[in-house]
Image (cartoon, protein in one colour):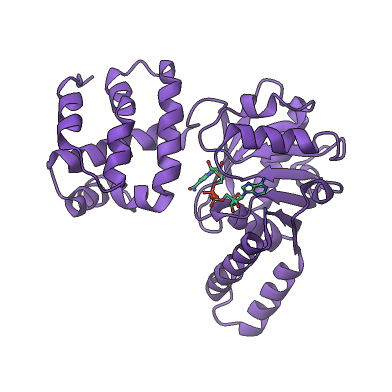
Amino acid sequence: FSSSSAMAAAIKNVTVIGGGLMGSGIAQVAAQTGHQVTIVEVNEGALKKAQDGIEKSLQRVTKKLYKDKPAEGEKFIKETLSRLKTSLDVKEAVKNTDIVIEAVVENLDLKHKLFSSIDSIAPEHTIFASNTSSLSIQDIASVTKRKDRFGGLHFFNPVPVMKLLEVIRIPETSDETYEKMMAWGKALGKTTITCKDTPGFVVNRLLVPLLAESVRMLERGDATARDIDTAMKLGAGYPMGPLELADYVGNDTTKFILDVSRAVASWSKASCLELVLQNVLWFESLWGKKFSYEISASVWDQCPLS
Ligand code: NAI
């Protein structure tokens, strides 16, 4: 492969495992950009939900892209949907695929089971990628015999709208795999950045402490939720306030990221961040609507400012 377009062209058939929030978005964007896509789910209900979600999202995208050309818009939707297949059989789905994107729930055991079940079935050249937000790519890849063809492709929600793709290399990722992932990201219309296999990658590593701190401010009664969000939108130029964003990402995903970050707290020397991460239980209770002011205040009182 000598050029980026040749690298991108190497990926035509795509298998997305998990058709939830992220998987359905990844599948949609891949189908929109001309790839043959198979979504794998656990039951018919989940597949139907994924398909319905994609159809609705496609309508929205098409309205924007083909505002004054309804006939072309209809064609775009029809062609995109014709490139989407669904399956309940992961082993069958990976038999003729160039890349597998795993977007199942954030659980290492489950991801291990999945990748080890398809490692000997997928073609030699097939790249395996995980969309994990918080688990180590190297840990996920450890169960496969294709670490040179393994990497992280971390998309952002909603996938059809968000422009960024974080491409994660582990030390074993070959140059060819890395270049194919980068080229494919561009073929999907994304702007790619590269990051090592470090907790939170770039965006979450910087964003999650902000979300955690904004919840603490709310909990202490420093400012209302509306004022915290307005302050960051108008004072820091953020398009969305941190509390609004935490709701949007999903409290379960944010909690997973915090839990994992806490487990590997040694990656950060910042004692303030560490204390925030140690306070996950409080975080959880807040989002379970059981506000716990005392715990938060006492932890925060001990937290140095630098
Ligand atoms: P989700 O809960 O919306 O979707 C997960 C889907 O996986 C469900 O539809 C579930 O039925 C399916 N699934 C579970 N076991 C399966 C199996 N064995 N085979 C096939 N499908 C299976 O979760 P979401 O939010 O889409 O997250 C998925 C992954 O993407 C996680 O690793 C998460 O960390 C990551 N991620 C999430 C982001 C977010 O904003 N929610 C952003 C970027 C990454």
